[in-house]
Image (cartoon, rainbow, N blue to C red; front, side, top):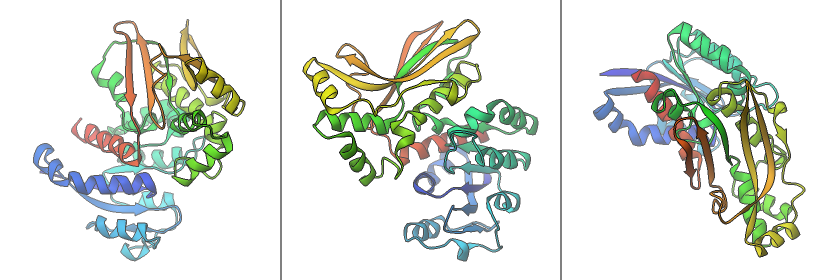
Length: 341
């Protein structure tokens, strides 16, 4: 029986969902995979941090987080900041779920690098490090004999990266097209029901789908960084979000949505990339799609990716109504794939 020590850097919605999933799957991990675990450390952005090599009671940590209480009381040593947490925490696996930085990927890149250098496997839900440091972090992981996985960076827990890494060897991606930002898809769905963009944003914020500053979604930045991540990893061509031809949905009004509905069409924020010789042309833009398109019936917070390769033609992955729990599953899958390999 293998006992692994885990470190959770970030304990917001996704980190807490991961904690709950670990508890739910604890018996299954032991019985089927021969893995037991101890949570050696948890660090939050604003509610303290805890390190205990003997193990932190995960249920107690979840209760404190949900009550808005500090985790410091669960720690056997003082932690100064996130990098100090990584240095001090005696973990085998680091789960990194800190906020994304579209422009540089920092400080998450530094956190992941520190974890790998200390000999940890790293599973992240963060798109920034994938886009801005995929090659260097992957090389470091290989040199350390560890894994750097990031299934939850695009489409939550849907197996996109692992699909092409493991299940489809020698499949060369020529193009992809889809809906990758669930927030804008929800906004456009609400606008079809007659709401203005501002009212739709207000609703999305009230249910925790949109941030207090929704510009990352509405202006297409989140979609662009997801496109860049897919192109970089799945197509093997390094691409930055700034290199994606990007247009958000601010220019799509209720009148345009209503007119499209009357014509049996829908506005969608479409993400696409096409191989062009040794380079890739990538784009994010609002587009009209008809009822014959696989994107037409993807509503609310659901998302879809249609991939064209040299061996399978077009392959579509559809994810319906994702949540922090599905993102947490992607992290759990990365954990299992890392330690089993």
